[in-house]
Length: 397
Image (cartoon, rainbow, N blue to C red; front, side, top):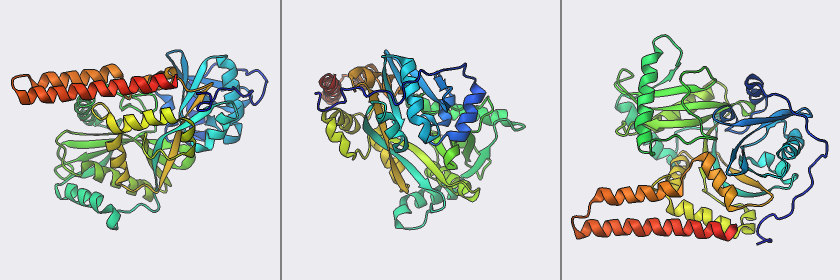
């Protein structure tokens, strides 16, 4: 096991004790505007996160304790050259507690490694060059056909200001669409590095809605975009639609947003992380059991969070880059660190996964052999899933 995970803890980059001060939210927001280069940097302003700052460098680290682990959200928000010192001071303040960082970019990876972190690739992020994006060409045929269908059906994309005169009714409709969408996801929001609607507070988010009836009908779907200040771009974060939305609504929304942002002079757009997809980092060979666990989840978990379908949806737009994202951990990767990361992200839980399978069995009924066999198949699937995850976690503990 010692050959597969990082066992040793390297010294801090600098031994000077950190000096922290009271963190003010306006100061944090200003730092995001200056240094936020990760697509999730703006999301760090939301949720239950705590913030660490040091007098030695400008910047901050956002984190959330979970299961005795300190889970850092994305990259440190600072100049890249200052990141090793900021991380070192953060570790000194956290003393001997286990620390991991979820969704670290390649640009910040060396700063974590310099402070004794191991790392493993956890997926790739779909990034688009807005100067090059186009619906033309054979590769974009499916997306182009979907957008054309939505247009023919009278769907129109409109940017919405939640604080404009008369916006309250539109805000309520957006919330209703979101509530309907959440029913399919177990009536809960995922958090940590995924943002919320925030319709009732002033932010730098932008809201794009798709209305049918040539712009006069109901809202079919919407996308909330968050700024990536240091890369002159936007992150298409919250994407939701009605269950019976006009076909092509989300494709039209996405294409229109890319087009509008490009015409405004923005350089990139991100559709966010495709978790567990395209795992091709050579360093995965250093963590065979963990890599096996991630591939198992990618292939088998679909009833609570379909990683494969999410990847395919983003891939059909043909991103200009698939940027790797990493989980960094110190002193080593353990089942507790994995649980803490899943817990704050709320991607899925074993209890929820099993519960959904039980509900599916109960809903199918037990009145005939066919239903019984379907139920049995679901139980076998659920049992194998739970057993596989537990075995994999125990092997890396």
